[in-house]
Length: 374
Image 1 (cartoon, rainbow, N blue to C red):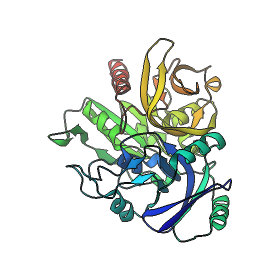
Image 2: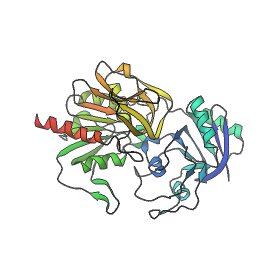
Image 3: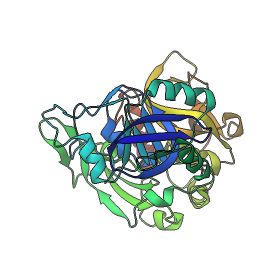
Image 4: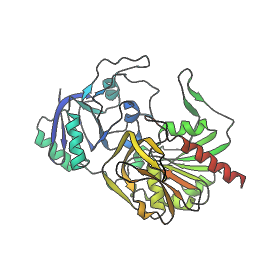
């Protein structure tokens, strides 16, 4: 079945439908990861986005119940060059096509993804519309132009949990799977769920943390009443500026407990400190983003997924700028000058991606240990 991907600037890409049939809209972005498409599909940070994969063959190892970062896929649509109809992997339990159909995710394949990515890089990420039912490209372009932008929308409320829960699953082991850890915890961490990835929680649990996940709008006073040793601010989708309730809660928590933020959590810390955020031209998404740590020669290859960034000069009076993206020199990490607060823009949980930055979880543990000794 024919499918059309239309961008708001009038550019159209004709391909074939796979996954669910119908229509969808979102900001069209690209991800440069070679593997990990199921983790990408289930990352809540992609809420409201149509994701194009730059790697040309997607779906070759199928899907399974383990390689997920949340309960279901969250992205608005999926774009690939070649969709593999016959996956081959001993862990596979189904095809990518069936997986997208199960969750109602509209996909389009046989698209020139290289041309699409070059267009986004030159013209910027923009709203797009996928249709498998409307064969008129001009009508689909008009639908893209009428679709809402990501800017100014609170997408966190669409992906956060509805009530608090405890997480007990540790990191993956090839022989044992995910280990259940229910005791022997040295630290209690309250994690704000702005669209949290499960591998973040697994890393914390595996390092001896009792993890309590709370909804995004949970008041600071309620979090403190749980007597945590540390507070974690998660990743999440979209524009951080309209998430004003989270910014206010973070301000009330500063100095009360050690705080660690990742991705959207990093941006919200920047805003809570009085800084500013801005929209990147086409964002950073993939498992191969180079980041320099400090002023020395230490380079981390990182996993990233974000379309907004903190303006470094807007927070440098209160924070030390600790990490910089080597592709565009945007801010990738900060540490408060006097309070136990630090954050990074990228994803140290490496799902999918490299393990270069996993040390940051150990840094959070050390910060909590230091505060406990006080």
